[in-house]
Length: 280
Image 1 (cartoon, rainbow, N blue to C red):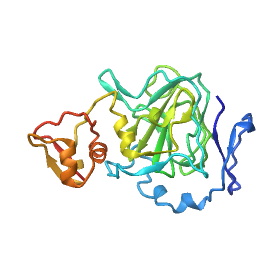
Image 2 (image 1 turned 180 degrees about the horizontal axis):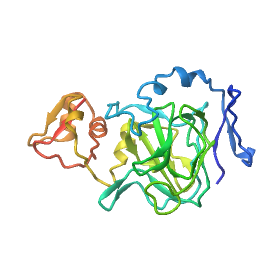
Image 3 (image 1 turned 135 degrees about the vertical axis):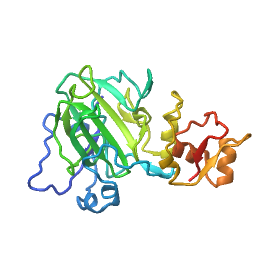
Image 4 (image 1 turned 90 degrees about the vertical axis):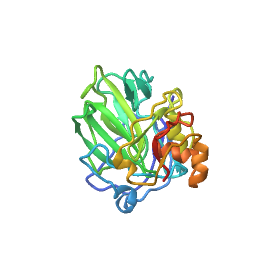
C-alpha cells in the first residue's frame, strides 16, 4: 500500500527544512499552496492553544451536527505507519482504550496524519511517554505516543506524511509500538472510524462530528460520569419516566446525535430516571 500524503508548495522559513528522502515520488498526491499565515491567524490555532497541557479544551462544547473535511484539494493525509493494529479502540479490561496500538520495531518512522501545527511535543508523565499532539485545520487533534524520539517542536507547522518522530517504548508501554489517538475538543474518536486500517486510506473525505462520536460506543457501550462542572456550562435536564432521547431532543430543539455527542451517550443507552444530561 502506497503512502498517501500531500505535496504542498508553500513558503518555508529559512531555518526550517523538511526532508522526504527515500519516499517514492509516485506515491505523492499533488496539492495546492497553503499560506503559512493561516496557521498564525486562524482561531483554530489560537483559542485553547496550550503547549504544556495535554488536554487543552476542558469540556468545551461543540455542535454534533457540524461536518468537518478530512481532506480536500488543499490538504492530503497519511496513515502514521502502515502496520497492523493489534489493540483497538474501546473497553479493555477495566479501562477504556482511547486510541489504537500499532506494534512496530523501535526507531520506525512515524508520520503526521494530516497537515497541521504541533501543539504539544514533550515527555508526558501521564503514561504517554514521548508525546506529540498536532492540531489540524478542521479542529481535530492527533496524538502520537510512546515515541523514542520527537523530531518536531511545539508551534512547528507540519504536513501530511512528514516524519515527526520515531516509534519507541517510552511511558506506560510494555513493547515498542505507536499509540495513536484522534480527538475533537479532547473527546476521543475511534481512529478506525477515520481510517480504514486495512488499506490505510480515509473512510470518507468528510464526516459529521456526532456520527464519529456515536460510533465510538457502538461496540463498547460506556457512559462516563458527568461532572458538575460540565453540567454547569449548559442547560440541564433530569430524566423522567417515559423519556427517550428522541422525545428530549424534540422538546429541546436539538437532535439525538447532538445529545449523544454532547453527553457521550450511545443511541441505545438506557436512560436512568433522575439521570441528568445537558441539552445544549
